[in-house]
Each structure stands twice: as structure tokens, then as C-alpha cells.
Length: 207
Length: 207
Image (cartoon, rainbow over all chains, first blue to last red; front, side, top):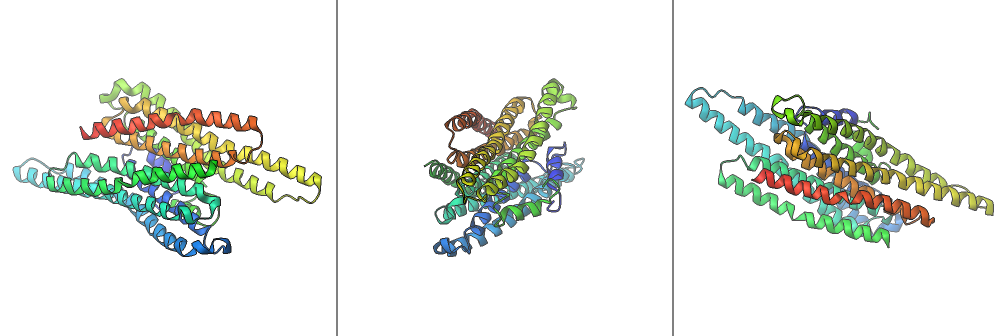
């Protein structure tokens, strides 16, 4: 996927093949947000004018690069996890033993398929926090890109949450459901921070 | 850009080069939203089970494909428009004549640079409306992708609006400012519809 051209990726996304779909798109939005945080840091680092922000910009850059790498990997994983559930549903169900094995495989596949968007939620939350950290320490000429990064990460977060919810609805284990929902809700709390960044930057641009 | 690999595009976005930046990212989010609307239509069309939705799905598909093409073109244009402003600022300003010519070129460049994100706002608004049209006529297995499409298009809309605002702040003609702001505000009204789609789909998934 990383070596696919942009044109081809959008064509694959638009096609009747269910993967890549919304889950992979969430990962791609997160990667875009992380890349924009990196750009803001790269346009701040090494300029004498912003020397006081150098240290924090270097820290945020390293974290954003790591988040981008995670997000791209998760966009790829999403396809694999999805295929796992499909394969489990196609298992034979003629005997009671086969039925039990199939149910077990489907349940494991669903938990696995939920883990990937759950991890995208976590990465997106990290990116929103990084945008918040760099907002008051960036080259002011690119402050709008901090807000675009927060917007892309928020979209990644809410898109991934939808994909977690789909899998949650079919997971039978109450313990697993509770653990997944609790982790997701922790990430979802950063949506408010993303909104605050976008509002603050918009005000700064208009003033 | 269309033939750039995904890996390379994110690397270019993250680099210290100011373009591609938030403007191009807004175009890419819009293209992603449009591609997901197309996917939903493609997974609805031709299935006897959804025959009653066939006609509307075909209509929405054609419009989504056109929107995706527009969004990708605008992501590319953003870079060019940005370069135009930079070139104008670099014009000589030694004589009064040179100063006047430079000011004129900068102002034209700024209006041009605002037109591109303004057009992204318009395309993003179209994609949100398409997501709204297909929401109750889609294969229900991919209804989450309708919400992901709306989320990506909303992010494109708010990101492009930030880029319009940046240029607006430097445009001297009150007439141009008013025309641009008025067109942008019309597109921004669809943000509420995007939010409504996301909420409705989330409820449907959880019920």
C-alpha cells in the first residue's frame, strides 16, 4: 500500500471491494495529521527567530514521525484484520464441532478487527495532543497547518471509533466489550481538544 | 502528484517545504470522502436486494466520481496558487512603478490563492450532501463508510476554510473579501449536516 500511487489508492478505495474502506481511510487521515505536525516542526526548527521553541519542536517532531509510522501501519493492518473476519465466517458449519470452531474463530477475528481501529483512535488522540503542544511554539506562518492537523486527526478518531463500534456490536464477551469501550472513550476525550485548537487558530488568523 | 506513492506524498507533506501543506491536505481529505461515497454506491449497485435504491445509487456515484476528480485537481492547484503568491512577493520593489506592479501581482495572487481552498469548500459541501443522499439508500453493511465519508469531507471543509481565511486577511478589495466570505459561508452550512450524518449512523450501528 505504501508504494501504491495516490491515484490508485483512491481508485481502490472507491471500488466495490470492501477493503480498503473506512477503517483504512481513518488510518490515512491520522497519518496526514501526523505529517502536518511534522511539517510545522520542520518549519520551526533551525530558524534563529524561533530558537526558544527549538527543543519542544524537536521533541514533537520525533513523536509525530513515530505516530505517522504507526498510523500508516494500522491503515494496512485494517485490511488484514477485516479479511480475518471474512475468512472465519466462511469456515464450515456442518457439525457441532465445526460450528463451535467457527464461532470461536469469528469471535477472535472480531476482537482482532476491533483492536486495529482502537489503536487508530489512540494514535489520533496522540496526534491531537501533539498539535496542542506545538500550537504556541510554532513558526506563526504555519499555525493554520496545526489546525488542519488537528482536524484530520479528529476525523481519524471519529472514523476509527465508528469501526470499533461496528465490531463491538457483535463481540459476545462482556469483558472484552468493556475493555475496548473504555480504551476508546479515553481516546475520544481528545475530540474536545481538537475542537479547541481549531477554534483558537481560526481566531488567531482572523485577528 | 497523482503518480506519487503514498509514502512519498506523506514524506513531502511532512518536509520543511511549505507545499504541499494544509491546503493540499484539505483536497486529499475531500477526495477520500468522495471515494468512500463511491465505494458505498458500488457496493449497492447491481445487487437484487437493493434494486429499489439502484437509480439513486447510480446518480450519487456519478456525482461522487466527479467530486473526487475535482478534489484531486484542487489539491494539485493549491501548490501552484501558493507558488504564485511567493513569486509575486519576490518581485522587485525599487521604483514606484515596480512597487505598484508588485502590489497588484500580490493582490491577484492572494485572490487566486483563496479561490482554490474556496473551491475545496464547495466540493466538500457537495460530498457531504451526497453522503446525506445515499445514507438511507445504501447497502446497510457499509453505512459506517457513509459516516466516515461525511467526517472526511467535514475535515476538508474546515481545513479549506482556514486556508481561505488566511488569504482573506491580506486581500485589500472589500468587494472580493465579501464575495469570497459569502461563498465560503454557504459551503460551511453543510458542517451541521455532516455532524447529523455521523450521529445518525453511530446510533444505527449501536442499536
